[in-house]
Image 1 (cartoon, rainbow, N blue to C red):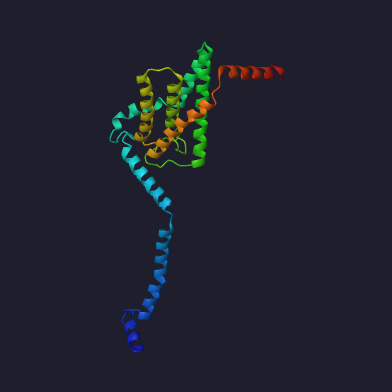
Image 2: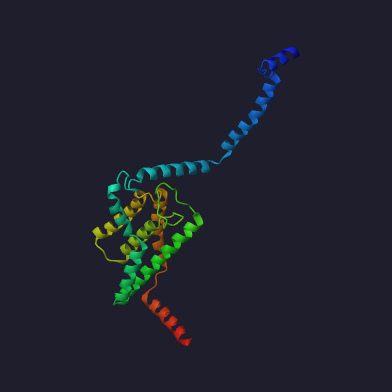
Amino acid sequence: MPSPGARRSSWVNGSRPEPGPCARRRGSSCSCPAGGALSARRLSQPFTAVALRSLLAVDLWLSRRLGVCAAEDSLLGGIRPLVKLLELSAHRTPWISTAAYLLLTSRTAEEQEFTINLLLALLLDHIMVGVVRALVRYRRSGMFPTFPSHPRYSFPSAHATRAAMCARFLHARLLLEAPVQALLLVWAALMGLCQVLLGQHNVSGVTLALALGYCQYSLVERCWFPIDRLQDVLLTLLGDGQDT
């Protein structure tokens, strides 16, 4: 053990004496519990949470790799206008406009029943997507620049749900040839793919959106409005309007 004189001389010379064994033991005893507690917290995390974060990381990595049309200078930026054109085919504006035009120009009761239920199905899709987005509140990952007009929440993909629902709607309600039915399914799958290529949605969001749109038609079919019921509802509304 150094004498007090030696300790004073070391301070005078400008060198700080090394801590003794007790100080070293106190420092080590103070640092060990913090590291041990941190390791314990990491080990105490549930396996499902760790697995979910791992899947989200893989999903984000894969979505980044597949976003080859996200910008003009991307790997496949040259075909970006073509992919955007494909995306436009599932936008709500052309579908609602076409259904409204068919309703105005329809001449038979069967055509009116078909177009009215198609409009109701499109309305259901819009409501379901809005409800799921409000519940999940998954913000856009910021993988690529998005337009200010894009919604704040991006799950699920509205284009993918609409494509899957409309494809199954037309597949079930129209007497189409087998090649046309196959083309509808391919169109719905390509719609989900183009959302990933454009970098607007993750792979998981598009996959679940296609499944949601496919299941939406089951609800549409269960709540299908025949033309006689629609006429009764219309007559009831008109009668109430005349009474008032």
